[in-house]
Length: 114
Image (cartoon, rainbow, N blue to C red; front, top):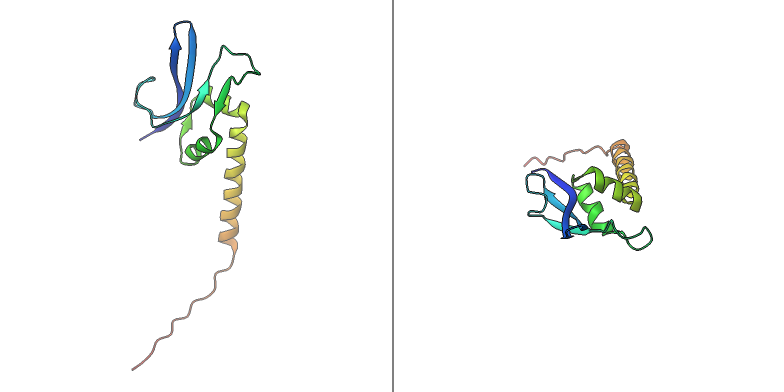
């Protein structure tokens, strides 16, 4: 199953309002989704909470392999979430490398003869 982070349209005609959701890529744009991460209101001005996304949920889904659409990637970049995700990936690579480089103690078997 391919999971995407994308926008679903709500609101009235000529007054769009979008939700940022996690959905299976095979579902329709406004169809079934797994979780709502936030919203995007393009008509509001920049300073008036135009886009709000739950950062913890977004980072969790990104770390589990969800792919954001181009528009959502742009929104997450503006909010600084993509930068935090990139830093988390780098930290995980460094810690995994450190774990691999540490010498493992030799294990000797103690066999008892009866």
